[in-house]
Length: 385
Image (cartoon, rainbow, N blue to C red; front, side, top):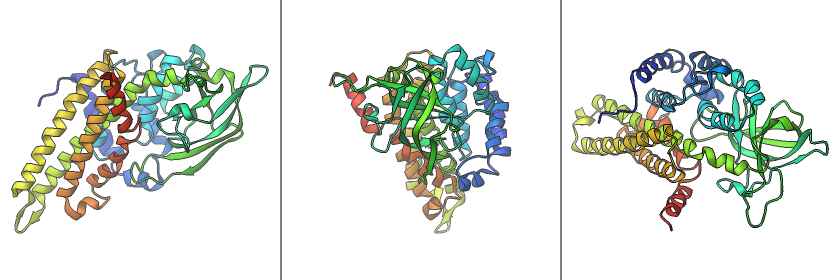
């Protein structure tokens, strides 16, 4: 089915990126998975290509592109090659909108040039050991000093993508006690430099997938954070987070759809080459039917994701519609990739095959960004239930 979301500029960017991935990512990707993250200079190469700063305004060294479509191209091309860019997606797709919407002019001039260049990589710390999707239950606190010059931050975070290598971490914390009538009140976002005394990067977590992306535990013990590093309004952190949730969930939907598309491509190529009982696996009716089902489901998800992408660019992607896109596209990806792995037989379980990495990498898509059970709750509320 012909797609209509991209124009000639997007396709030219796609070709440049595809060539870059083939030459500079695919050959070294196994080493990234072994060490748990890309080489630090890789992010600077992304900065040179303009990938990190696509949506950063030109006055801060970026491309000034308001559309999210170039970001979608990056996700599609990485999936097509069976690779990932470490903490890139969190940095460019999740964190940048917070900085653009809530940073002061001084903060933008301080952070955005390095953000676009890859000299300043970012992470966001929301999840805590006892608090996942229920952000209102977080226990990390920050107390403003008597002179109002700094906050004193205490607490712990876990599952922080990019947390081990980040140069700046957006830490969601409680700056005032919870209101019994509004548990979401009193949260704030502080931008914390890992070099601060009392900031400790703990365990680097060993995940089943996304091996090229560092994920860490972070702890804060009496960390002094300048009041000038408060992002947005004090006490309005939950509202700030909610503002960006549609794009975050769109990112997951787009990435999952790209992974499913890549899985169908990998499986189709494999079954044409692999022989069983003297003939190609592709010759069996079951293979044809399975791949036909996968192709149909994947195109349905792609159509859904493309429509959500258009709505996001128009500023019309609602929380409920983003939840629908994430729910549908991640569930489709899970089913499709599982079927495509099955067609690979035993080789599908070998990590040297891209399908195995897609299988492991995609599983978390139904969990992060809000579990799919939370997505169902959001959708149900939109139905008046």
